[in-house]
Length: 131
Image (cartoon, rainbow, N blue to C red; front, side, top):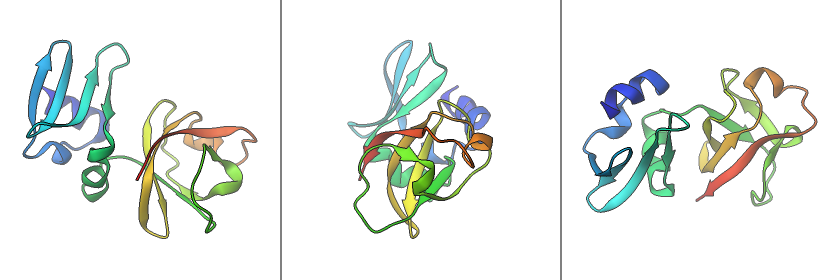
């Protein structure tokens, strides 16, 4: 059922390969051995990914991405001035991967839809995890 939900949300369940479901309903845990990779949040209808899952999500191209520029360490949220490229299909509330020069830096939760990213003066995504 979780794999089916992943296919519906992300178009793939490849990131779940080799993982198992544990925990108690309705907040199921997706585990690799004893390490938590994600948790299902039924009230918001989404997976909450752990920091450990980000490399796997990147390899399987599960989540949408945004690329930031500059050479300073990434701190804080994502604003329009930082963004070099992004997926125009980004949806509000969706977790996205943040990259620089092809390297995965972490993830952020989108505060604005992809079509708003071109000219929005405010925060586009709130920082979630940094690798």
